[in-house]
Each structure stands twice: as structure tokens, then as C-alpha cells.
Image 1 (cartoon, rainbow, N blue to C red):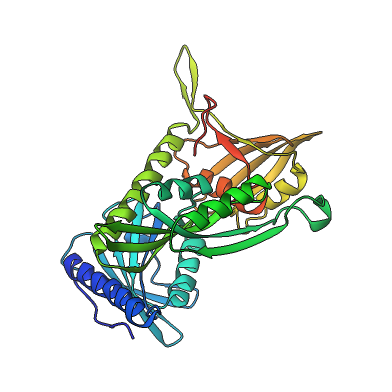
Image 2 (tube, helix red, strand yellow):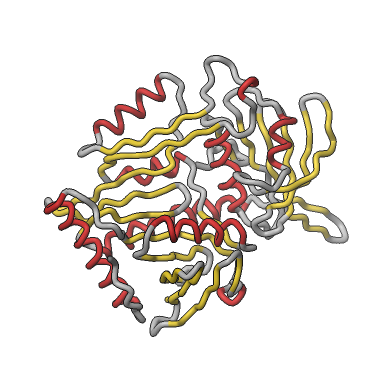
Length: 367
């Protein structure tokens, strides 16, 4: 069983994480099985300060302790007579890292509530293009795919369309992963990965075997160098931040003076791979439920066109969307959180149209 010792510094935390991944590597080599506990890092997108996190919510009570490192905190979580420990790194104010060495189902249940129920807290939403980019510098030895049509009814689909596809593949090398993806693509099946397994080897030594999920969870299955894992996590944040900055530069703003009126920014355009039933799509986009977590009112309805005045339930930010069968336009106002674009696009890939594309004002793809 994993140690319950609570560390009080970044150095001690990294030592504990490295000891754990080494133990899992030895367990695999000696007994061909993984240990029960693994090092996990969850990247959280935050629009609030630490002081805004409630100390009690949905059956959980939270105690936040500081450490000798300014931006590292220990979070003690209690629920149903169970205690578990998380380590929160807030060095990046926008993207927090939550490390833990606990049972996955325990932490996953908590973080699902933490990121979906608390105001101004969200997970990452990496579309399959970003997942693919993570694979470029490592050996891709596995993946998972989960596509489920959640907008249209079964009777609305043609005989050739896929309503649900789940797949999980592990391999020793990258050949099987590439081959299966190419086979799916050639036959028009969804290839929207929910995770990818990446092997980092240097001079014959396994630095880490990480599984990176589209929601920002990264599990170290085994390894020898925790700094390589942390470097990888930081690179994920950097790539996500770069696209976030690009998205938020296009937010709509209005500037006026005595002699002129100027509109800055531009909408984002989603191009569907086939015509969509915009009434059913709009109904899903405005009911505030998963996966989109948006609410709104439908207005300006005409044939093959409607407009949504929406609210992002993650932050309370307003947005507007024009829906047409072939494409949609999203207008993100000044100061709104750009994670809405990630969430909408990624979940459309996973639950409506796996081949949808997204463009900026110049016609350049975002991802």
C-alpha cells in the first residue's frame, strides 16, 4: 500500500514520486504486474484564486496546507470516512498541476466533481490533433478511443454511420498503434483518441511510460526519472497555453470614440464533415449538461439558421453562436474564458462529428 506520509516541500514530493515510479518498474520486471498505486498528475484550468475554493462541497471537505515552497500546497480531502492527499502546484496561475499517489477511482471521482461543479475550475480539453502532437517526440505504444453519438438519435443516423466506438490498444512498439489508426481512417471510422501511451527511452533506459488523457490527466505507469515526467507535463501546459493565447486574441471587443467605432476580434468557424440537424444540436448546446456545459436561448430562428445567446457554465461568461447545417460560428466576447472553445470543439469530436474542423478569421486551422 502507498505511503501516507505527507511531504512538505517540492524536493520531497519529487523524491516520493520517483521512488513510486521506480517501484512500479521493478514490479513489472519481477512480477509482470503493476503496483496498485501510480503517480498521477492532473492539469486543471483555473480562473480563480486558491482562496475561492470552497472548503466543503458535495460531501467532500478540504483542508489546504502550505509547504516550504511558495506555490506548492497539500490538500487533505475527507469523504465518507476516507482521507486522501493531493499536492497542488500553482506555479502557473492559469494551469494548476495536481499530483497524487492514490487509488485512481478515488481521485478521479473527486476531480470529476471538483472540475465540473466548482465555478471557474475546468479540466483541459485536448482535441485529437493535440493528442497526436504529443506522440511526435515519443514512442506511441498504445491508445484509447471512445466515440459516442450524444446529439442525434439512433434513428437519425444512416446505416453507414457509427453511433458508438470504444477501443483500447497496448503494444510493445509503435507499429500496431499506427496501423490500427490508419485502418480506421481508411474506412471512415472515428479516431478521436481519449488517451495515448507514450514511452520515453534514453540510452536503453525507460525514463517513463506515461498515459496522457484528453482531459489533462497524465499517469506514470512506470519509469526511472520523475523530472522527465514533470518536463512532459510542463510541455503539455505550454502547448495548451500557446493555443489558448491565440484563441483569446480573437475575442470580440468594441472600441468607440467621438469620431469612430471599431470592432476587434473575430468569430471561430466550425466546419462540419456533413450537414447537421441544427435544432437538435442547439437543444444539446443549451441544456447546461455534459459534455458541453453550456446554457442558452435560441433566437433568430430561420430555415437552416439559428442563433444562440449562450452562457458558459464554467465561468458564467456569455457567448454567441450562429448555427447552420454546414458550419457554426462562435463569438467569444472580451474577457471570456477561451477554454470554452477547447471544450466545444473537443466534445463535438467525441459526441457528434469526429471529423469536424475549426478555423480562425484567416482560415487557418486552430488545432
